[in-house]
Length: 441
Picture 1 (cartoon, helix red, strand yellow):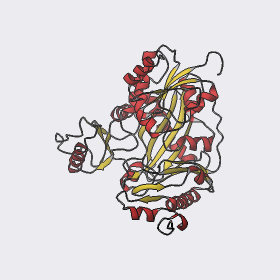
Picture 2 (picture 1 turned 90 degrees about the vertical axis):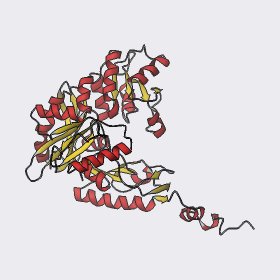
Picture 3 (picture 1 turned 135 degrees about the vertical axis):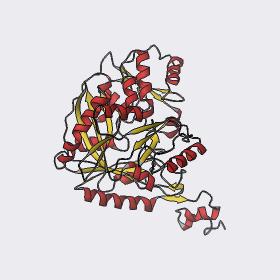
Picture 4 (picture 1 turned 180 degrees about the horizontal axis):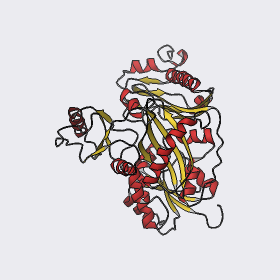
């Protein structure tokens, strides 16, 4: 695609891997970087792409103002792209203003708003949980009883299982309401979804011209909500389309019918489903019009040779991706590592992790100086994550256990209220360098 008339995209957020795809495909980009993203310090942006700092990368006002201040507002953009869940609708609105391609904002809403999404999917005959809207979770006194015997309470447009809990009665709901009100949560519009049990599956794929060009299926070791409520480190893996074909056959009708109902025509998706092992029932849970989090991009590339970032960019520009699936026989999966309460003073590096047998990729998310708090608040809370290739699921899980133990042995945390003596005792120093045993004279 390189040439004198290179395509130009407006990218909301640094969208890990998408800037690199721009360089490979000869696409120019203005990368909008919000304050939170800059403070966090994500993947570096390749030279040649324009970085545009803003306060909030999901705010159309902030993005438009920054474009005008920088003299970029008159540029002719070909598309607006994002992998930021919270900027999806903004991408559509900005594209309408700029006169370029992006997901239609009305379609984007169906992927963002869990109430609208469930209603649309259910109306199309797809098996999914019933849903009830709560306009203001800070005040649930108007509800005298729970509409379902057991329900999941969650923000209507949330992500990463944050502020999500199971409620089994009206007293549980009112107690959650009081907690959220005391915490002054910014999110106040919530939904109650009928609880659906079973294994939690994940489908990730590419759609172009309304046609599903590629999709893969995987599973979480524990459902995300269970992992958050119990403080368990998350793990997931890809199903093999040859040796585990029955899972694909069971999920495919739900995946395709849900995508048709939601109206995604060009782009990538990340869908979550529940499978009941006893009945074989597959139930739609949620779907995002972006690639999945964790190391799903890396898993898909490692297992199938499919680059979701490159496919997303091409779809956004109206170019059909050429997808050549080459499935590896190994079991590919990701494990999260937990931290321990306290302030981090030493942590293994990604390079050390990738040097270990079976580890094909690692990302360390916790940093020296970070204070880790007890209790998981979302699936984004992790100290590190690794992608591993193994001969089987059993071998994969055994390797996960070994790697977590290795990481925990080398993670050093101290109580943030520790005294100077306790801090010295926690440091890894040789006796000759310790002032307590090596006096000056």
